[in-house]
Length: 561
Image (cartoon, rainbow, N blue to C red; front, side, top):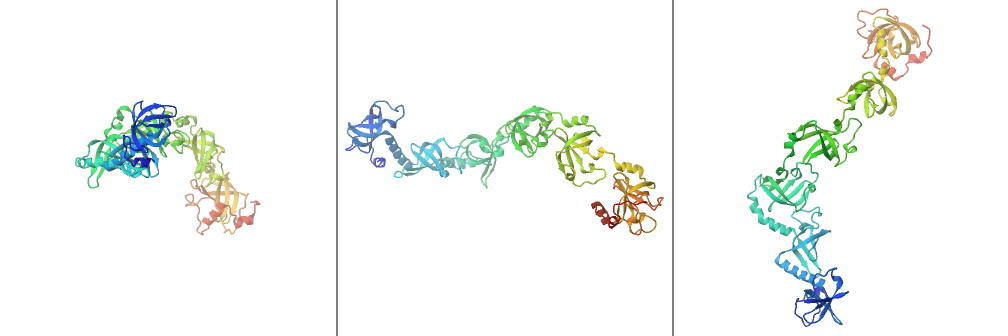
C-alpha cells in the first residue's frame, strides 16, 4: 500500500479520492486510542495513538503530514509514521539523482557490511566504510556521519549507502596540493583512517601516511588500538616521503617530550622507585616508572632464592612494585632494575652461618649427572659435585646411590656470595684414605698388605681400608709365574715393596719379589720388558667385576703364606 501511495503525487489539496495519498492535515484532538486530524477536504483522519511515544511531538493545531489509507464509517484511517517514511523515499530519489550527502548514524555490523539509519535502515558494504580495508568495525558503531546514496530500489525497499565516496572526494581535492609541499619535519593535523597490527594510516589532507606503532609513543605500545581509533584527530610530523614509491612515514612521539633526556636528572643509580608491570617475558619483567619510560628487571633479579621459571610466576601485569635502579644507559635507552636487591642477600649471611668446613644436614632437591643439589637453608641450594661423593669409588650415576627428598649430611667447602653458589662435599665427612695410604706407602718402603683379589694379570692388595695397590704377575716372584694363585690368594698377608705411588691417578704399584728399588724405579710404574703389564682389557674386566680364570680357579678360600 505504501509503494502504491509513494507512486502517486503527494498533494496537500483534497483530491477526488483521498485513499493512499499523503496530505497536510491539522491536529485536532486526542483520545485514549487515537488522534484526530482534520483533512483539507473537511474529512477526519484517525491515527493510532501507539504510533507516538509518551509525549506527542506536536501541539494541537499543528500541521502534520498524514498518509490517508482507507475509509472508515466516520472518516479515514491514517498514519503519520508511514507518511514520514514515504517522504524519506522521495528524498532518497532526489539524493540519488543529485549525488548529495545525507546524515545518518551507523547502527551495527551485519553480513558483509554495516547497517545505517538515515531515516530508514540502509546497508553500507564493508568496502564502502572507509578509504582502507576495515577489519574491526567496533570504532565505527554509533558514529554520526554523512553518507552518499549509491543504490536505491523502492520496490524492494533496498537502499545502499557509501561513506568512502565522500571521503575520496575530499581527499582527491587536497591530494595534489599537499604532495607538492611534503618535506621531512612538516607537522599536520591528521585523521586516523584505518588501524593494523603494525600501525595506523593517517590522512593528512588527501594523503595517507603510515604512523608505525614504534613512532606512536616513547613508551611500550602492544597494539595501535591502545592509543588511537579510526576518526581520531592527532598531530603528526613527516618523517620521510618517498616520491617514487609514494610512501609517507609519519611520527607522533617525535612531537612529545622524550622522557629519556631528563631521566638522569630525576633518577639515580641506587634509587628505590615505584613502577607498574607492563610486560612479562621469559627473560624478565618490564616496569614502567613513568609514562614512556620502562626498565627491565631481569629474571635473575626477581628474588635471591627459589627457582623462578618465568616472571609470571611471581608478578602480574599492571601490578605496582618497588624496584632498585641498578644502572642507567640513556644513550642506548636501557634501564636496569632489581627487586631482590631491595633486601639484603641471604647469601651474605650464609658465610657467617656456615663457614668452610661446617657440617650441615640438607635435603636433596635435584639430582643430575654431575652431582646433587642439596638445600642447606630455606630456598638455598648447594652442589655436591660427583667428584666429591666418594674418595675411593668412581660414581658415574649419582641417581643409583641417592634419591630426591633424601636427607644427607654434607661439608661446606666454599660459598661464593657474588655468584650465589655453594660448593658442598660428602666424601669430606671422612678422612681421605689416600692420604693415610700416602703416609704409609712411600716408594722404596716395604709394608704389610692383604691380598684382596686376584686377576689374570696380578693381585690387588689392600694397603689401608678403601685403597688397593697392584702386584703385577711379573712382580710376584723371581721365577716366571703362570698363575697368580700359585703365589697369592685372597686373605693372605704379604710384605710388599712400594714401587710407585700416583695420588692423582689413584694408582699404586707393589712388588713381592723385590726388597729395594732399582735406579729407574719410583718415578714410573713398573713395566717389565717381557710385556707382562696389565692390558686395557685386563683393567676393564677388573673394573666391571668380571672374574678372571685365576679367581675362578682359586675360589674364595684364603691359603697360608
